[in-house]
Length: 370
Image (cartoon, rainbow, N blue to C red; front, side):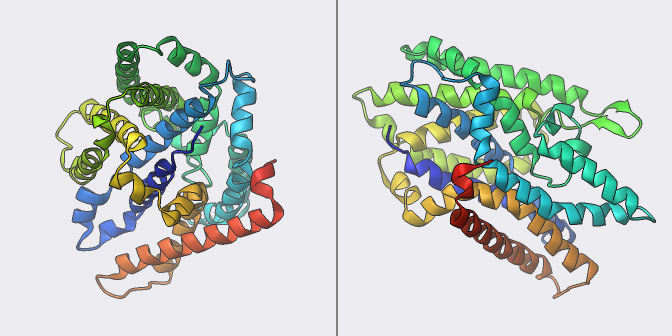
């Protein structure tokens, strides 16, 4: 099966969308209102990563009679290669988590022990089962993604069978795609109402509707239906749909900039647009044989796209330490301080990621995993 290089290039661009949304310190500057309204939007990037995971699994396994392993074994095999990087990201984040908790305490023992327990929980990749940000976003705030992905992978053999039952007929596949979107929206509405529910004093369900595997696992099934549509359309002699990528990219860029200004719209309606648009973007770019594909398939974007998981898992601890230095040391250059801090975080994240990757490559860690 040929590699769809353009999807790797798009993966790095979507990482940049996520990175941009983690510059919350920009709120404190004169241009903070502009940033929050037009640039603070990671939804499309996160959605793309989950759909791409489902797309890639189905794309690479479609010709197999069946998946050779069960759900748990499949999840372990899929996550094994990236797990060492995940461990490194947690270890880098641990000192900051201790320092942050120490600001609310008079002793060091409690922050050290508490965060050590949270670190051990995060190592299991089961923290997102809780639906509570105090556990799911502990230590490394973006580690929830890998936990949710790991838990969602366990359902992939079942998702693949569902997709296969609807294959061979474009109408059935489109019907499954629409049905999955409706299911995601329904579960999102239910979990959103559960968010804010107090479980115990100090423990609140507040991460069900966005990050939890109870919602996100279905994104992998949605990605698989998009992959099946890709196979059905490429088998068609018509080629008009292979030039839709430019329109999809234009609409996606427009939606990225205006989504934050449409808070008056119902949450479920915005999520519906997100799902439809990211599905359309993934499908059209995978089919594209024109200029969009050639740009995204460039060697530089390819390398950056393949290393996106390094950037994703390591940028957040870097962001925390840099922001700590700017805040605690009172580094100030006037109104452009926020922009300088964002540039330092971006450059430092790339540098740290490249150094860790080089170390992994020298020891062949990424290929072997744990």
